Image (cartoon, rainbow, N blue to C red):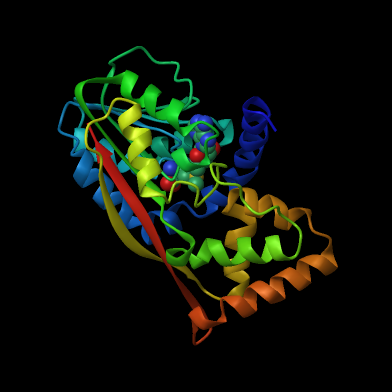
Amino acid sequence: MDEREFKQVSRAVWEAMAPGWVARHAYFEEIARPVTVRMLERLDPSPGEEILDLAAGTGIVGFAAAAMVGPEGKVIVSDFAEAMVAAATRRAGELRLDNVECRVLDAEALDLPDGCVDGVACRWGYMLMADPGAALRETRRVLREGGRVACAVFSGPERNPWAALPARILVECGHMPPPKPGDPGILALADRDRLRGLFTTAGFGGPVIEEVDFVVRADDVDDYWNLLSHAAGAIAMVLNRLDADERDRVRTRIAGAIGRFSRDGRIAIPAQSLVVSAS
Ligand SMILES: C[S@@+](CC[C@H](N)C(=O)[O-])C[C@H]1O[C@@H](n2cnc3c(N)ncnc32)[C@H](O)[C@@H]1O
């Protein structure tokens, strides 16, 4: 699949994921709060500044930044999936965030002028893109002199069993090819040397990489299965294509694999993001 085809498929995946992310807006706000907090500490938006949230989904990080830039500032909440932007627009209206503009934007080819924002946030976006280097060059281009970026990607499979276990089972069952190095995906930017290289090649100086732990919680196996099938991007698409018997078999294997993270029926699986900041 070339990059253009990948983008079409990826956009369709995320359009399909929008209802799941809308339903779980408060959930993702809550479980990943440590990630958002660290990103915003590093980005440090000040009153009056303009911040761009890229691959923003339903707008969680951008809305938090909006409170920091205040009424004189502005936040552009953007995503390439129209359904995500529509959801963010609705939510910004409900929250009466007059300083937020929601826009459809492709992070790899931003329809924005050079040097138009003071900061860029991107939580769990760059690793999903076919050309994260292009997205980081675009990020650099739209930043003013001295502008900052703070993003989150996921670290390796050993720190993220919530995603690594189901992916491994889908590969073992022949439903997904094993990921090739460099392919986009949930865990695709875990390699710190690659991350650093992408930032420096895009023109950023000395990126700082920090680990932030959090916990993926589910009420029970059904709830975890719902999370995987309605929010987990490419994994969700594979699960939803299985026939009923095969889905049951895969579900049983995944339930067995995550059993060790279950206490009194509730599930708490470790997760870790890398927060990268640079200017
Ligand atoms: C895992 S979700 C994260 C959403 C949000 N940042 C959050 O943390 O709640 C990934 C988002 O990246 C978006 N995305 C993927 N590739 C993109 C691209 N090339 N340009 C803009 N958005 C993209 C998807 O549409 C999806 O909303």
